[in-house]
Amino acid sequence: MSGFVSFVSSGPGDPELLTLKAVDRLGKADAVLFDDLSSGPILTHARDGADLVGVGKRAGRPSPRQDHVSRLLVDYASSGAHVVRLKSGDAGIFGRLEEEVVALRAAGIAFEIIPGVTSASAAAAAAGIPLTRRLTARRVQFVTGHDVTGALPEGLNMTALADPGATTVVYMGKRTFAGLALRMIDAGLPGDTPAMLAESISTPDQMLTRSTVSELAEKLAQTPGTAPALILYGPLADSDA
Image (cartoon, rainbow, N blue to C red):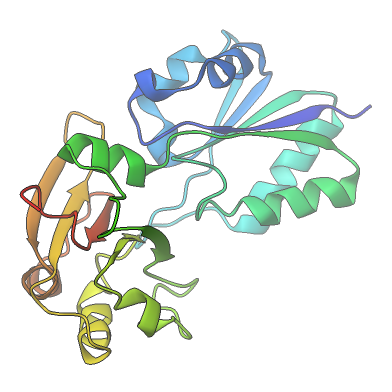
């Protein structure tokens, strides 16, 4: 007997940013496999008696292997359970969604993907800025700041990342931003391009730090901190732009 898996996007942390469909699936699930950033108040929407299993990954901390998470999904669903795989932000943006989908397809298990609020949108909203603007910020790009080893990924398109007319959002990039900034500046990005560090977005610990690419790179090189964060840079990262 096969069950069903709902990949539910939990948003950046504030339970009020959950979609109605996300709340519905949490309330019906037999088991919820959740990321670290999807824990806390969000799990109050889970059905009483549901198995709650933490499978989150955090940089620099012991974390479950991806193949173990995929195996858990398959095992729960193969028993006939309705499983919610609760992913922070939007499940399809740097959420290791594809590996888990591949495992379910190989096992013949049906699934659905429920989109949600990505932390980039939530950070811009918290700062009171849009991600785009006619004429001066007509493109938005998302990039991961680290690869599977935690290092700055190889093969990044520096021409695109150094485009001063784009709004760029760097996910999981606090520890590598100093090196990335040097490469972007070498590629032509002005060091005084506005930048913003957005930490613990939509939670009580939220903190927004406005700076420039050069200044933020220097700050993070010295004290990256442990709070989950992303970095926005471009013309709109300055609230006065």
